[in-house]
Image 1 (cartoon, rainbow, N blue to C red):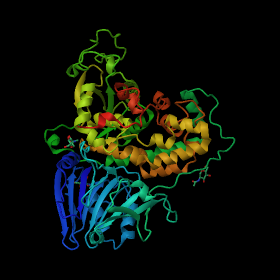
Image 2: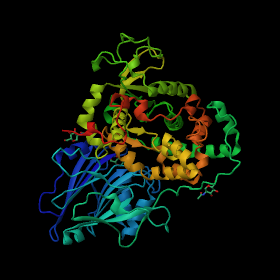
Image 3: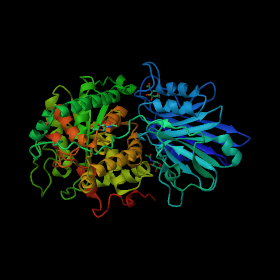
Image 4: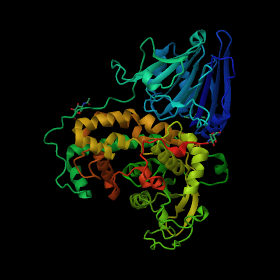
Length: 616
Ligand SMILES: *[C@@H]1O[C@H](CO)[C@@H](O)[C@H](O)[C@H]1NC(C)=O
Ligand SMILES: *[C@@H]1O[C@H](CO)[C@@H](O)[C@H](O)[C@H]1NC(C)=O
Ligand SMILES: CC(=O)N[C@H]1CO[C@H](CO)[C@@H](O)[C@@H]1O
């Protein structure tokens, strides 16, 4: 994980990175910072490249990385496949080597098409004075742009900050629809920023569906985005979605229309299902393996102090099926002696309000005056943090302990009071979430920020005592992408009821297409702020290709009851992996499961602009 940034200026004024942006960038890459500039006199342009590196593994590779020809690379990504990266090699170096030998844009697009894994890139091609920038096919890493209203200045950065009230110009996400190139000499000659667009396409002969103009709003008059003149594109790393809707007539799923484990079992008897389920388990397992084995080195200070049960891997954990499957698969691949952190966030329930002081939260066993005695097994806990995700999280923990009793599972109860939420939102989260700005972005952004920070109460295995625990894991697995691909949301059922399979499959294709702008950029900015790296196994290229090639009726059957029909194939996989009740838990969105939505104004719509995100 890194913070990368570049300021391009055709104006005589200064070419500087605002301090506020720099500060936020440094959080993402606390281990090494460096600035490099490039200046050309005629025609005049200047660029400032600023890189902030989080050291993940091997020896630290400083960025911007420069080669002998003067090419510069700022790479915020991971190569999980596609290009050979030897055990002693660094992926940043390998990417630069590949890019710097390319003679033209086809070559550059070819290299980036081959990478498997998340990335955002800034690349300065010295010989042609070109800057390339963009994000991977799904947009798993953040990249924002900003164009000055008066001066000809473009800023690109992983994370920004909220504009203050008197600033008009907004930050925008760089659309993960392709990559972009600025020919600086050409731009400087015309005193205009012409951004050439190279789209992702699904097959070599497939025309691009993206219209670049539409993705870049509010351009000042000196800037434009145009298709690249040679019609070069990048080949998408996944196959196109199977849009077939002609489900075989005999395709019936289950006798009993009851929501039960027996119903799942019955479905698993169908041999056709078994094969698909096994394939899904295999491809997901491999995706998790790549993400848990490509690891940060342990931080030297901890190594010296001899702490050896340091955790490397944490999972955003609600106890729901998506996170349970990640936990079971991580257990396969994380070395036996290593603990795994399960991050479970809860916002204080208002109806069970107790002492207002946040410092006393969670410490006093059953001290809540008016409340019924706590029914949960953790007697220390007052009911006020027993949100739905906490309850399913604990049940999930029991299932995991049963399946893998040797593993040390650190179930972290992360309890957040309204005061703490407000403070962190104002000071940090609003800046990180920006330019995402809806009520939903606020809820999820805050929930994910607190969860991934990983400070909470951990229960010892014997349940006797809880103590404060801080997760040391630099890698955070999240289950995002499962609902979008396997029809987990209630809106999918609504769409299915009104428009049948055809409506459903269109909805799924649309949602996968916009997942970067809806979720991934935001989540990357939020998690990256802790100097940690978000990894998304459900968005592994092989997993997506496997699911894309299946017809929709094999992924979900929305005529079945809730808790069974949505994400059906994943539920079957969960059962196959030995999971019990969690395999048939209905989907619950994080903002409701963690009860953060309950803390706020209940009359808001999720898509409204969130007033709380506006800073003074
Ligand atoms: C490459 O170097 C960067 C910076 O030191 C580090 O974060 C990254 O994990 C390294 N990658 C590999 C594959 O060694
Ligand atoms: C889509 O699914 C149908 C039904 O399984 C299958 O016959 C067809 O080959 C699939 N199409 C693609 C492009 O994979
Ligand atoms: C996360 C973080 O450090 N955010 C900072 C971003 O920049 C603004 C403006 O300087 C600060 O107020 C935030 O704290």
